Image (tube, rainbow, N blue to C red; front, side, top):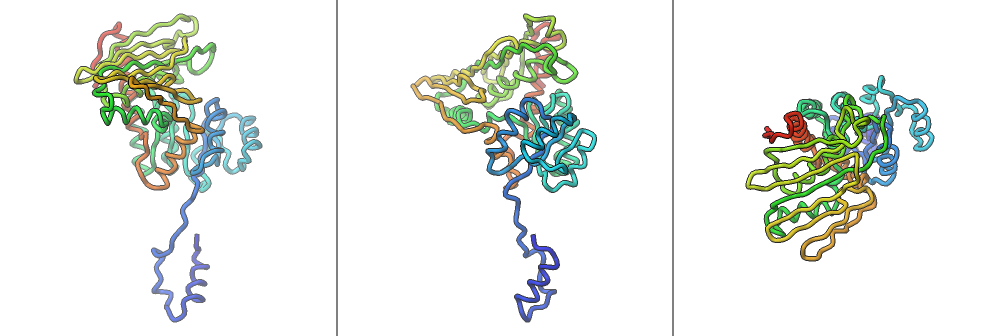
Length: 363
């Protein structure tokens, strides 16, 4: 960046005969950052094992700072990633990130019940905001997050990494091109066996439950596979471990209805390993099995095609795409409005459960 003193020196020494008054600062080209600095908020498994390593592979962003309430974690990350002291924050001084020019993006990687408050705080710093899925607990919280980012003129992106993944993008293109005809039915399931008993995912006040954590995968997959918004849901909640899943759902089955007769059957669970997406169309079918694995997606089609494109790191691709949207001033691939649409359906799923699995219209 050219400061005023250097500018005046350059003007007087290099351009003889022209008065300084004729120069305009509007003509000065200020170099733009080539990489955006990212601060991770919350240093649990996802930040530690996936996002931080991915940020070592990104081309358009880098790990610049951290926010943690655990001093031991701060020291470990400081040593491992050479993070300067001035870029290490706790939850009390978090808001002072506003004054740190090293940090351009704040990535919220906290339990879902904390997303809304921290996204709003992040937006008020004037930094762009990335937020892990699920976006929040309620539609109202989602809207508050969107409004805060819009009001502070920063971008908000939700961490749906699969939207950036090539096999997922291929099945979306199949739908758009009607390659196998009109979508008729979608079956989607995502879950894993979680042996833990005291994790936040079993804690209602922190946003636990299979539907919030894993259910957004089949739900979002149904939405991008059909290109439609569901108009009704019927849901059933079960558990094989009631001593653990006292507050939240271990397994949720939900059927979605759409206009034009399209239907979807979904399952999500902390009690079993499931990972499939099957799209049935009027002229064939295609699938992804698994459809949301970190190690890569695989699939096939009714006419013998293989869906097996591989990218080196899904999280790196997601963050680079989002960074480029900021640098190029374009729309992010997964804005807050996309996350809100899933939460609207999740609220209806829980209303169906509370009403003894009655069909609930989605408003």
